[in-house]
Image (tube, rainbow, N blue to C red; front, side, top):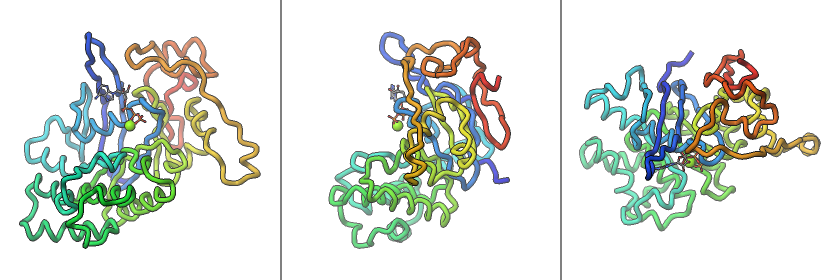
Length: 318
Ligand SMILES: Nc1ncnc2c1ncn2[C@@H]1O[C@H](COP(=O)(O)OP(=O)(O)OP(=O)(O)O)[C@@H](O)[C@H]1O
Ligand SMILES: [Mg+2]
């Protein structure tokens, strides 16, 4: 069994809006991520995936709960440990157009993290920039160019290089390919897979595209309104989805084999999404669930072990 690299314990992130309103973007997340794996995170727009990723990265302060990195609670780290955590844990954003400063050269963009973390002499930093460009498949001739001179795919390679320059161990990948042309999405995903193998990286891979998650992940978590409702190994989840929301999500993926595709029945998700400002008691999917029963009003917010490393939050297992 691989070591746990990151443990989230009852993690919450609430946003305080005007007039005292509170938006509970991340309600309560309990999750272990293991060294070297790719954990795919899926769920519809607004369910809190990016907020979770940004909270792990430290862009947002958690409202409650713990983030434990390599056995150490990040809230109790000393300055040195915190510095290392900030370096070990990097993030890649969805949009390589807005995430890269257009006034910085490629060299400055890649070296920025090295500067911030005070790593190496000027000469060593320069060498690291060239090494990193090579890792992501960009020509060393690009060092003096600016981000706006590049195509979307090249920019995302640059964003990956920026994250990799400090040689992190864990990368939050927040929909890193969604903004790219379909024809180059595969190249970037394959690059990320190669880098993971070569550098021993762990990924939290946030995505909309379930086929891509199926391709890249080792385990998958399905998020609904701030909570994980199902977590399992990829093969188990795709073969044996248990939560009605997961079943509906998976039913929407086209199957490449036309004979089976003809038989595929898409389960529509109908009904109202409860507002993240006014959470309803019990299961938050019950307003849209075809199997909702009275006891869904009092469902316990617990992922129950249904065997085969498969966990589900649903009254059918309570
Ligand atoms: N900085 C913020 N201030 C206030 N509310 C926010 C903030 N960031 C996100 N939210 C809200 O928190 C909820 C979760 O948003 P989040 O961006 O995490 O969702 P997501 O799952 O990443 O969605 P998408 O798939 O569209 O990227 C949403 O209701 C969103 O409007
Ligand atoms: Mg998002």
